[in-house]
Amino acid sequence: MKKTVLIIGAGGVGRVVAHKCAQNRDVFETIILASRTKSKCDLIASEIESEIITDSVNADISDEVEILIKKYNPNIVINVALPYQDLAIMNACINTAVHYLDTANYEHPDTAHFEYKEQWAKDDEFKKAGILGVLGSGFDPGVTNVFIAYAQKHYFDEIHTVDILDCNDGDHGYPFATNFNPEINIREVTANGRYWENGEWIVIPALSQKIDWDYPEVGVRDSYLIYHEEMESLVKNIPHLKRMRFFMTFSQRYLTHLKVLENVGMTSIKPILFEGKEIVPLQFLKALLPDPSTLGARTKGKTNIGVYVTGLKNGIEKTVYIYNVAQHEEAYRDTKANGVSFTTGVPAMIGAKLVLESKWSGSGVLNMEQFNPDPFMAELNLRGLPWQVIEK
Ligand code: NDP
Image (tube, rainbow, N blue to C red; front, side, top):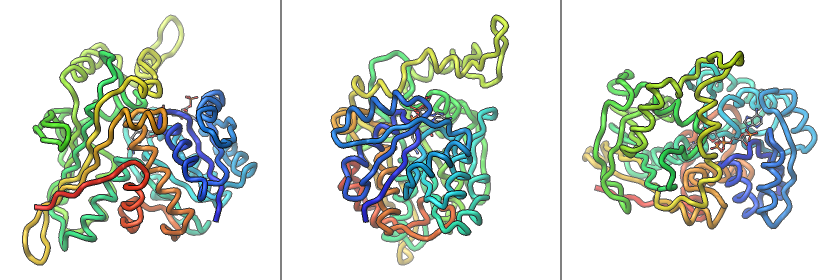
């Protein structure tokens, strides 16, 4: 029963995954944490009482990941490096027949565009290798997909509309900082908004649609329509769907900083020549901003992420709101990380746990809503992310 897990990536999320795996030693007997900078793995290992093996790897190079996998022979690889590494790590898992799990879909470093196409294309190879590729086992994607699958299984015959509502009400005290990797975060926010209605994608200018949403335990917050990756799989896997949207809260202070940075070209990913050297403005900005993994100790407040679902049960219209409230301070006490890393890392550990316990089984590349939601929902309550259902 006891298994070996290889975690790749030692940022905010990697820290939470390592802590949470170490809290579940009955399943994760041996834990290896590897990343580009080994000292970051060592620091995380030093925070954890039981033994964590650390190593270094450049996960852009599939052969390096393959060598690492052969060295430790894990039962599953949890990829919490950056989305750029997804394909290289997936290829290494295929070649070594080891299960794969990630929290973000593949993105090419040179184009601010992400989609599942290239990961889904590996479905046959995963099936041939007899392994599972679990895509997007963070909070959103991740828990939100599972919430919707749970609503579909227990509350609806037909789901007609879904709004995913993501509020981070934490305050880290800096005028401007991003709660996870700034490059990924800013790319997401500055992209055009997109939602799905009556079988097609509607594109709108970035941050041009806003609603005021009353988040339980937080209050009313400005929530902006943005495109978010879980919608790509959900519109395929949830039948009868008429509309799906995603809203995220941003404070006016955050948006003002972002606008200025955008206007002066600092959020661009097009390389420029500076004093004879090519630099990418967004990467330079990342170097200036606070490292998200250091925000945990200073962040106070709550997150509330949930799904608001309408549809039919026995011919009667109904509404269900499923959400989780997490507390930044509590996340830090448990894992020395902020609430955003916590809400991502805990579901990554849970997904891996269910695969290793064979509660989620099979082969191929699958998104979270394609698995049985019940064991995952039960684990959320046990591992620090309890959820509520409001039924109308
Ligand atoms: P960080 O930037 O804090 O950490 C990323 C880690 O990956 C760093 O340790 C970094 O190493 C390492 N890394 C980067 N490139 C390589 C490489 N080529 N080889 C090996 N290691 C590498 O990011 P986060 O921890 O905030 O995020 C991790 C992942 O989680 C991202 O993919 C992000 O998109 C995803 N995420 C998902 C969410 C969800 O809800 N689904 C929400 C938030 C994040 P180094 O320190 O040397 O740079």
